[in-house]
Image 1: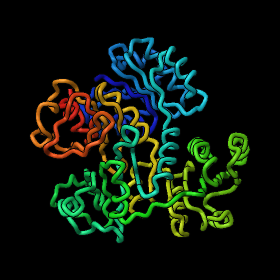
Image 2 (image 1 turned 90 degrees about the vertical axis):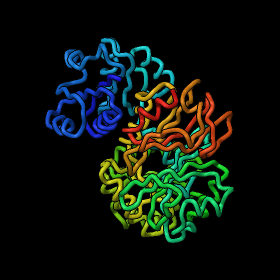
Image 3 (image 1 turned 45 degrees about the vertical axis):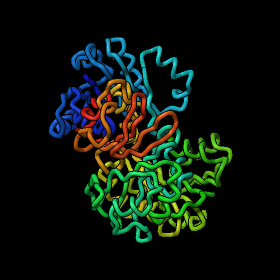
Image 4 (image 1 turned 135 degrees about the vertical axis):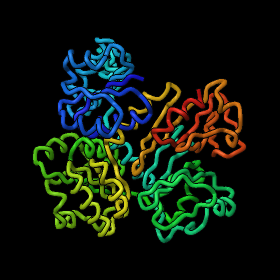
Length: 446
C-alpha cells in the first residue's frame, strides 16, 4: 500500500516507523528537515520537507497514486485541509486527526466526508473512553474488548499476592481446566516473551491474555487482584481528555478536576454540571490532601506534563489511592512508568496509531489495539472463504514468528484458541502480532 503521512511529532513518526515494518511504501511530509533526517535513519521510508497543505508538496509525494493519506499534525485544521486537498488530487482514502467535539458530531462528520475527509480520529476521545472503561474494570492494568466483551484482551501485573507465581502455564491449565483464557505475552524486566507451556509466571511479570468474560473473576483471583467499586475520583488537568472523561463519569461517581489555568476552570464549569472544578496545581501535595486524596478511590493525571502526571500518580499511590492512571506522552517513559507502580498508562500516540493502523492491513481487519509497553498490536480479523486458516486446524498452521492466535468469536459465542480448533469462514479471530508479522498473518485469513 502507498501511504502518505503528514505529521509534526511522535504520532505521525511512530505510525510511520510501525507501518514501514509492515512493508508499506511510506512517505512522510514534515516541515522539520532535522526530524525527518532522524526518522529516515531509523526506518525504511521516504521523506519530504514541506507543508502538507501545499499542493506542490502533495504532488511531489505522489498523492494521485496514493492509497491512503493520513494527516496527524497537532493542528486539526491543517489535518482537515490536507485531507480535502489530497482527495481532490486523487488519493483513495483520507484520515484526519481531530480534537474538536463539534467536528466529531455525527452530522458534521458526514459533512466533512462530503468534502473528502473519509475518517476522523480523536485520540482524546478514545483516551477518555479507555479511562472510563478502566474505572469500571478496576483489577485490570489494561483491557480491550472485542465483540462487545465476549472476548477481552486483559493485562495485569503479578504482585506477591498472585496465586500463580512460580507455576508454569501448563501447570495452571491442568490445575484450573475451567478457566477459558490463554496467556499470549509476558513482559519481564523489559523483555517480551512469547510463552509456551513450560514458562513460569514470576513476580513482577506483566501478562497479556485473551479471556472469555465468564473467566475474568477467577483470573483476578489467581492474579491476586481485588475488584472494587470506584465511588470517587480526582482528575489532575483540565484539557480535552479530562473534559471528556468527566462527561462520561460525572453522573455516576463523585468527581473533582484540578486545573491551574483559571480560564480553563471557567470553561469546564460551563460544560460540567456535576463536577467540582478546583483552580490549583496538581503538584501541590497540600492541595491534594485538602481535597481528600487519602479518601479518593481513583486518581487520573492528564495534564500536559508527563512528569507531573507520573509524580502526582506516585503521590496518590503512596497515600492509598486504589487506582492511578497517568497520561504519558513520551513513549520512552512507558516502561519506566509501569515499573515504578503506576497502575495504567495512557498514551495518545499509541491510541491514534491503533485506530489508524487497521485501515492499512486489509478490509477484513475490523479492530485493532496497539499495546503499551511493547511493539505489537492486537487485531480482530474475519476469516474469508477458502482462506488457509479455514482448511486446517490451528496446530497445523504455520503461524509466523511474532504472531499468536488468542481467541475466536463465532455466531456470538467466544472460544479460546486451542490446537484442535478449526476456524470457519466468517469467524472473527483475535490475533496478537508484531508489525513484522502482521502482513503474513493477514494473508492466512485472505
